[in-house]
Length: 505
Image 1 (cartoon, rainbow, N blue to C red):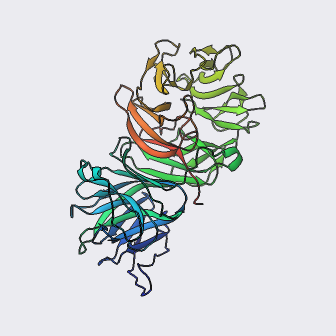
Image 2: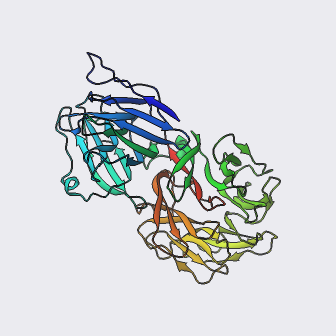
């Protein structure tokens, strides 16, 4: 653990304190805004990737502000998200949250989303330098719910504040156009005590700064956004970044030993320790054009891959430790799961004379493939995966139109049963090794039916296999490649996934 205490610096010609440039976690700058009576401080714990922020200040309100600030300079659009929690019980009007600010001046143009000490969550903004602070009337009468997660998004001159209680989707708190906010803004986490004689403290975790792209972005022409490999404890919601790269990698599997993850990158497969570290390439023989459909057999001995050998994507199998792969299917075929007997594969494929893509299964000892679904032209099925007990195959499908939903069927294709019934587009159901949970990715309702694009605001959600309402595990920027394959840890306590972000312009 590294501790930083921030000196309170004054310069006679400066309107505010000068930011220190010693990085704290992902934040490049830290400072007190508006000369609070007591200097703020910050700690970043690299093991837990958690921030402790302390600060004073009379308020963030009126014509001028006083608070402590950890921030970066961001150009263009952004989405910033984090979990916030006060330490102790003190002033009911104290504030923590996200802020975007035009400068370090205490009366600068600003916008933010803040959790107060009494549970009120509010959006606030100052439209012009030196103007009064404003907040929507609804904020004043809003129920005090102690939202744990706060998000601030910029889309051009529009700033959106969202908040969520643990396990729930985001609710929009406020939305405001700010024409005087510069293209490069100061963006970060803040704390204000509201009592100038008091120093308040808060914990902040799952801090993510994402630089999104618009709908016209073409990754094949403009390049892929950066990727982050993350692990997450599903019971306490704590996330950890274990690997980052400025280009593309996707779809982690957890290795049977519980100590490493397997993922695809640049047409090959690699492993990485679960805590991060050096990556190691897997020997896949002549297969060097792999996509993100790779699965490990239940007994931990075999690896299935989808590889384009010039004839389109076909499925191959090889020993988990590596070797020359054996072809199993014709093209196009995309692998999604093994049967618990380790002798069959279940996959999505398109065949001549058959409408759309359907789910098939086939023995790794060759023989004929068996079609398990009968999609109509406008329908799509995907993400097929056996439960560990072999009683069901889970998948996503758009059988009834509207949105993509989760389904399951018997291994022979009978007794198809819809499992989710919501407004989101739900993809890639993954069953935990203990057979108790379904983890899946939910796209927003506005994406094109039957698609699962990259670079979108998505949720990872969890629901009991026995039935019940889904709850949100994580809010992130991702999509294609985030969780295409089963990424449960063997102990059923952790999952892994990939999130995306561009660089500050």
